[in-house]
Image 1 (cartoon, rainbow, N blue to C red):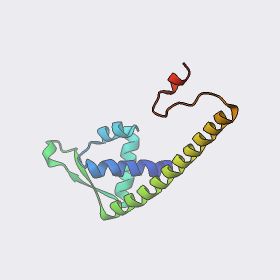
Image 2: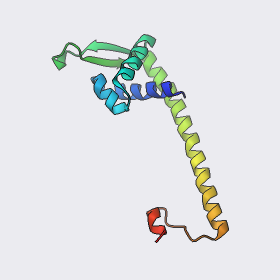
Image 3: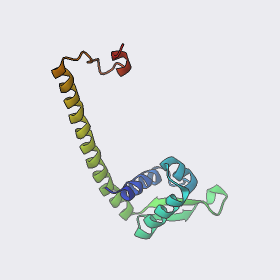
Length: 125
């Protein structure tokens, strides 16, 4: 999954749950610039994954309601599968690294093992 696809995935997640969110709030929530948020939203709209409606209850003409289209929902599901696969691979890599580090400590006889619920800083005392 590319960085752009990850941004699209996260945008689709937020829009699904909060279709009335403003672009400014969306940018803050995502940790990206307002310009990038606008650019990505326009791309999702151009792809047909998201459609907009005026949000009349807001009292402002420049507020929109963002709705995922059936195509957007299908693509979000695909991006979710890809994101999950990447996170599982990252998890397995970290898990292997932890086992290797634990084995190294055990081989050297270093007495730094501690209950996983303990603070690692406590092991140094």
